[in-house]
Length: 312
Length: 286
Image 1 (cartoon, rainbow over the protein chains, first blue to last red):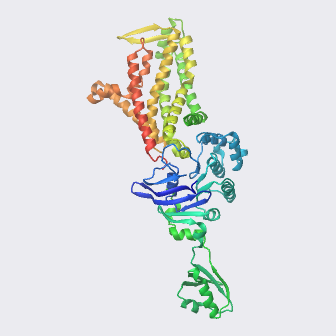
Image 2 (image 1 turned 60 degrees about the vertical axis):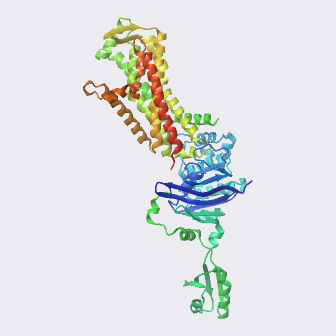
Image 3 (image 1 turned 180 degrees about the vertical axis):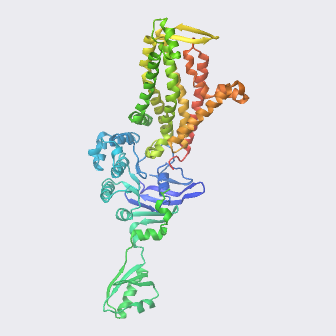
């Protein structure tokens, strides 16, 4: 069985003159939680819609389990569950009827299976109520329930944490981690909550203006830092020495330490130079970057228009 | 299998919507009101009085047959047409606007099967709007009066028909209106696949209906004979939509009914095929 569950090659979508997605290549491997990041309008939702066959690519292809996805065509088998933006339901039906109806369109689900899923997302007690009275968090949980119902191998979640309170985020995260660990479900997770991506995703794909700017392990993305923190003792100022070392690009004094812009591989050289110059080195640490900093460095500072714009 | 599931799902949605029942009740109430008006206001209304006068000769209080024809005509124009447009127009556009269309389309189903199910479920729901019709027909046909009044060669012809024939004619008229509504539904479906807002789809369908209706009226104006309008007039769907009234003539005009059946069927087929094509080809959820 192939290790790659989702594959995109040269995926392109053009709306008139506007290029929403531009030749995107990426792989999602079986069993991993794969983050998907990009600013508003970067092309995340369009990419997800192409994966789900809702939108026809202008060029390129996407395949799930090695089978190409064709928009509008019947897909059989289709081991994919999805939340696409805010999950919408038939408000005049109960949560259970919604699930029963959606399940029937994916080959059906037993009563026991629906009970199990409702229990998993914590909606057992409210299953007979109409969805119109549901809170946003409950709708999100119901969204996850409908996505999990057909026992998917791949779960595609587009902003599932959007608008949730901290407890809601934690609950939903717990469910995601549970299905990933216990059932081996692969998750492709798009979210604006970078701390969640950092916490849950082993790999991450970052896109900007429809193009891929990074794809790889989250750890690699975060460790790819040029920041080093230096703290010296005995009251001596290392400024003069630091200015003489060519591998230090910039040295900024902070309250009790120095923040250096340099290749972390040269830390031993710096340590040696400091020791030879008689400095007591109390701390010399390559800093791990925060995903937020990396994200902004990859995609640029957010502009004002973005704050109100929806993703395409 | 999946088509049956789709059909069942669409049917569930239609039957669980409050609007469906409000629509049914509105039609039923309108018909009852018309019948009561004919019965109680007979002494004040010359139209109603004429029905009563004719039927008193036959020992009936009211001519139920004619009352049904009037009720059907009013209900058809005032309520059933707008409600049909509303039902069909919201099938795709309404779900697209509400966001549930992408939820359904992300399932392993083909768009071809989905739109077929939606069309059939909407048609079935709308046709079900006439649920009041059989008991109403039964009452009108067998108890309230079966007098056919028709102008034949400039002369008013009165003819008493048997209860069975009366029921048969009324049931046929009801089926023919259903057939006509499918044409309107197909037009609404085209606009529903083109618009994200059901209101826009409804407005465009109504606009199309009235535009064609105006052309039909202009074509019959002797003071304004436009050759093109006169040529196309027999083929306009609005003209054909009234073909069910052929059932209320002294002798049923089968030629008119067959012409209407074919013409409306062709319109339905063309518009429905167009809706299919748009729904399958267009990035409807983007």
